[in-house]
Length: 497
Image 1 (spheres, rainbow, N blue to C red):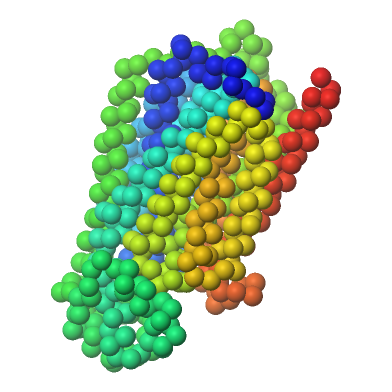
Image 2 (cartoon, rainbow, N blue to C red):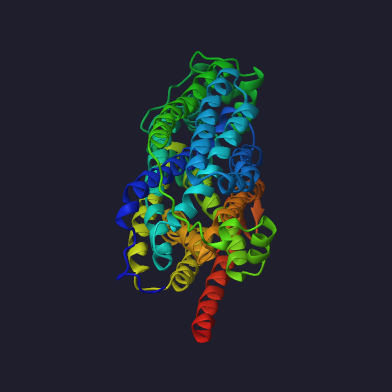
């Protein structure tokens, strides 16, 4: 598997279908990464804590867990194309539900919208990944999947950019935060050390100057011990009557309309892609004469249960997705807490991390022609562990750069684990893919746990925010163990041959 340069990665007869299906990788990347910043945004818009706002990820990635197995059974009964059509339909429906969620100012309805949207993503990922693997020789399958997955972060980068430029930078609640901090400085409430280390860098990072709202200024004078969370809670309750001429409900409605607009737009884009799949046929890639194509479900499950690389792949994928979502979701809180950045500026660093991720994916895909997937995965995992420790223990911008560097290490992990786990499964991959998509629920539970740790004052000898990144560190340890197991299994397989 270490040298695939002599084999055609994509046979000519599958080229158009490969391009068409690769569009899907960008679409679910967009959904993933325009949603991640909502954890931080909804915390302030709805005046909730980190643990509560992380329900965004519970709903989003919980949809994968709910629909992965039904999606696999559906495409086995019908076809890859049918699975894609259903997936795109559910994606669009979920995106459009965000519109009434914003009109009702309902956090729970947003959760429903994201839950339904990821029903569609579960169908798309359960379908597209094994379909790409099947578009050519088995020995080039991992390379082919990595190539298709390389376009996933392009969608992610688009989602991140829109979140930064059109959502986070436009929120009224961010103006509230800027003004509140400026009034604290004017009143001499902020301590000198905090002023130098956090508050001034925060204000300098803002493109807009404070509004100097007199009602908020009066509130700060009357409540010198109030935190930003306290001020937002009083604003919501009506104790603080207005800000910039708006009641809390008016500000909330404004911000939620800003949040919902990109989802409405992507809903129409998804419908356009749906039309492309409705008017184009996709070629058959599996061998209808392969006995596994017609195996009873229990026989398929029995074969999968005896495949250690597949079972280990599910575990590794669960921890990988958890690590990815934690690092990308909470980079905003990390930058706010440790460097005083506003959400939009912090998200710009997240965008830079995604650029690193995209570059790393193309570079590492090239290296896969010469290095075995297991060996490359092991090296990336160890590097990710080192970068995570840097983010925990190193102060200032260097710590943030370490957190961003983790993206380079993660760049090839998902498709590599996926390709290793499904290697040689043939038609069984239609069912096997469900287990790997089900593993995406790691992105639902682990951020919820990390959000709880972030709400603590201290954790593991450091702050709650910094200490919470011990969770991604543990995830990378698990991935490294799987990578080394993969290398060992491949060596044993060669010895047997």
